[in-house]
Image (tube, rainbow, N blue to C red; front, side):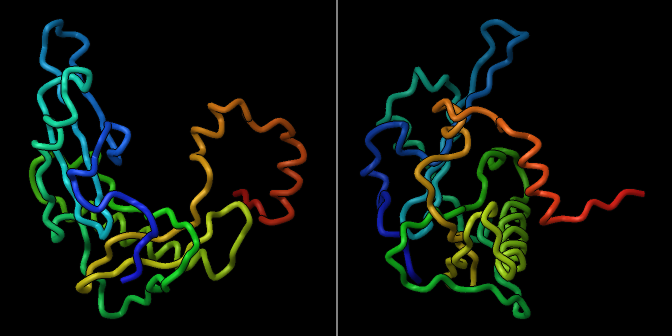
Amino acid sequence: MAVPASGIKQLHEIKSFADFDGNIGTCQLDAPGAPCTTMLWKFCLGGDAYFAEIPKRLSDITIEEAKSLLQRVPDDEIYPKIPQDSRLTVVPTTSVPLFVKRPALIHYDIPGDHSWIGELLLSEAQIMERVSKTPHENIVQYYGCFVEDGRLKGIALKRYGCTLAEHFQDGHGPLKDHEAFMRSWSRQYTICTP
């Protein structure tokens, strides 16, 4: 399996909350003094996933405490088996910087069967396979999938210098010339109306 060139290999390498792949905190605003919960997750290089649900605000958690509470997420809960008839491209070994899209763990705290998390990732990979057959400058470049033991472990996409949210936070602002955008868009697509 080809792997991206950089990243955290083991949990002890986590030095700050910025090293986590995601965190979300929830508090009941209508109940003063009600407990808050923070969820943290991390994907290590190679795809091992870890998750923690901590009954505290993020500001009240130390990095050491967070690392100690991370639990390994079983592969079969979030990484789907690839169907025999599926034709997913396996990522070739490359020196190109990649963004590896992993399963979304934002709802992993919900009790019950988590197979739907992996099914979403598999659906997205299948869509990317189709879309990549007719590349477009406004759709991220797809390189293929990371596969291990017959399971889809990630989708390899072009890595950009920043996220879309960071792009707008840096003052690039919203679309300025709507008319030029619509002219360009309408040359590419046909609008069907009932």
